[in-house]
Image (cartoon, rainbow, N blue to C red; front, side):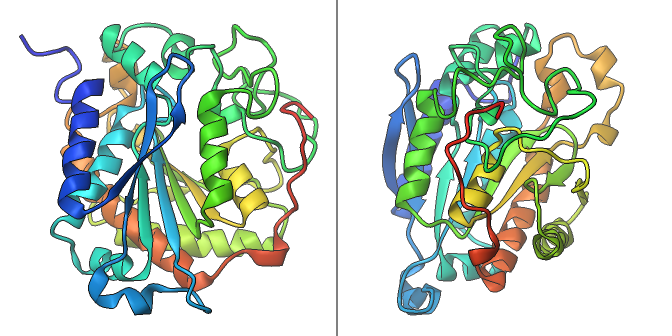
Length: 334
């Protein structure tokens, strides 16, 4: 009998597929660290296309790097499938992907939160958001990164979603301090080691592109350009940009940390738009199907070109540079 979450992959199948794709592409597999329960956090580094390697360097000969990071929330399997789909597409790349491969190393991390991925599979996608979203210590990893600046007050936290929460029972619990979790600490160590030009952070389920919290108009305009490039590259369903600079706040999210601390163009990508099947939020017999499409294949085909378009535009744009805020050691919550 098929698993209730089929056609999605078990943790073992996900890892096996990553191994297979990495071998076929001549990619290096690295273990960044281990999760709280001891599972490996693995990333594939796909080298630049050998034939055009000289054309893929930044000024001065330094290589360029881009990152796809998925699975920071355990039940959002579609992001992991899109990440693996990008690796699959590299085996017979379409023109813009071939061009990207000639310009940059492509790093792909399919599961930053392997404990929650495994828990979601074992529970067959059933349970409350808190149980399936967070790591093994109940921390929302996407609220656990350092704040680039103190958090400004808000009238409503929207249940913790907008700011993170200090309540361990909340699904947006930020943890005891910034980078308190082995998963976020492992990613931060990679970011300090590799100067990524751009990062696509894969989530679900709004059908939107969400830039970091921005404080400079020039950056708002730049992300408008980057989001447009993503949407124009999508062949079927184009995502919307969600950007409200006047209302946005630092929350301890990954893209805020990447942009402000490391000068990386970073986007949160929400796959599987909410408007595709609004009724699923009432009809789904388990939480998993509110966040993941019944068939991931059409969304892989739709969104992989968007990611490539974003990366190409980011490489053309150059780094945020001196316009970024210098990151400070501010604990989540200010």
